[in-house]
Length: 420
Length: 84
Image 1 (tube, rainbow over the protein chains, first blue to last red):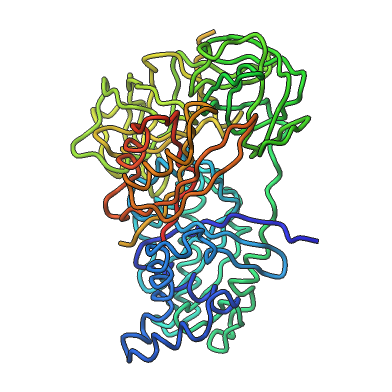
Image 2 (cartoon, each protein chain N blue to C red; image 1 turned 60 degrees about the vertical axis):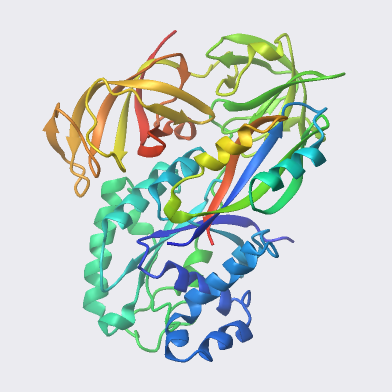
């Protein structure tokens, strides 16, 4: 039987050894051949020091030459799973892609260097993982060799990281596996470390096998954000999109919001094959009768009339300001990227400002917020927008805020005032 | 910082768009790692374009805008990103 597949996102501060850990995992699981490692060892001390990180670089060069850009080297298997690795970029602008992108990570590895501890980027990535709905993390406390494999250093950092994860929202942080590793020396990556006999938990590889396949959100109301719409000769109107939640069946009557237009689903296709029903994660086209092509547009959301998509006249959101050249005040109207929609929204109230380290309110109604701040804001879309409360349908609650060609902030909707 | 592999789904304006021609235009415009075809539904096919951008350059918007502006393109959607 084929092993189940999991998308695994790796996150952490840029200098904490993500590449080395990935290189080591790929090497010790046999994806990267020994000759490739030897090649770097032959380069002398510098080659030795960077050999595992350089494996990743070398693969990168191959890809840039266009040879293996199918990303095949980013897959490896364990006893239980096939993993596809998504390595989170360092630049904040990519946060938009992670929020609106179609490849959902099922689990994550957070890498924190033992000698450096929690850095702002560690916290940012952890918060992003939570916002993205990555419900399970494994934490690698890396570079244990630089702290002489000391248990006390690991234990102290472990409790700090657990507290940080709780603050960003992971209530189940105490269930996450924490592994003290030295990716560079291969300690506790796939083999138990002789140097850390005080540690009796899983190796990194075993920790990955403790992940579970997240259940598909089929019991939630149906939501299909529309990516594009076509009029196909001999078929009719065909909206295309990915099912986020719920189940779509042939014969269902659908309502598209914000327009409120309804129509009947005559057929559903995925990869050119006719299917009787579609589930979360399916990229589909469906033929709908009763609605013309020009009555549907990108950013609309399809649902069932019994629980239609929520059109917001205003909403309350929790945001983290990632970058902004100056400051954000009431009246600011940047573009919100929510599912497939892009709508300018005005910030009508900054309700409070939170301490990112503790999650506690530090100021009510601040005059402005800036880079590094977390805040609760009230927002008014300049035109009708479908957005859901995170407690109802988290898949349609997250958004990125963009302005001046930058991703300014990431956030989730925590309350909605319905327009109808 | 490294480079980021971006996977973009390029949807044509309709089933009548010549995907071979569109692929040629995309290759002229950006240095791509690979382009493959992805069957969608009802005869409609998308192009899956993999390209790399520097992490430091920040974001995929210039790439998305450039592809969106090509004749025959209906919409583009970044479906995957990863550091390489």
